Amino acid sequence: MEDSLQGQDGGNSREFLAFTLGAEEYGIDILRVQEIRGYEPPTRIANVQEFIKGVINLRGLIVPVVDMRIKFGLGNADYTDLTVVIILNINGRIAGIVVDSVSDVTTLLPDQIKPAPSVSSALDTDYLIGLGTIDERMLILVDIERLMTSEEMGLTDGALARF
Image (cartoon, rainbow, N blue to C red; front, side, top):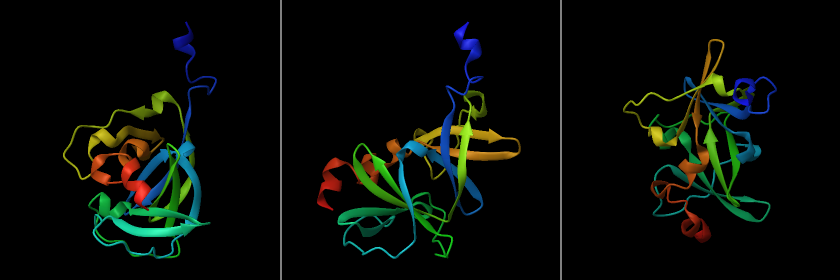
């Protein structure tokens, strides 16, 4: 009986911060977002993955910054006044991601989240929650915690401790 009521009271809804990369719109769990800052060029670090743009000083904390366009193979970004860095808190570790722009916070009910199709893409479906649909709008929902803590990102606990 309780399963049939899921989503009607909003108790199972999830909030996602929507952002753009090129022509696509993505969403990440709002609970992982600490703050949103205007883009400022980070300090480059030698011998790191290309998608790691460098580090920024966030009130005395050195924070690695990942350019999501490069990470997802979408080419280099033109950094504009709309470009932002989303500061994330992943398991007590702070990291930033560069995105083209942020649009809004969107609430999705379970029936608005569809499984991601298994297709070959720069963004492995292991890092997707699914596709969020709101009327004609579609959000690619990224499991940002899984993505940022993957070995391929090099931002695991040991690596983050270096920064």
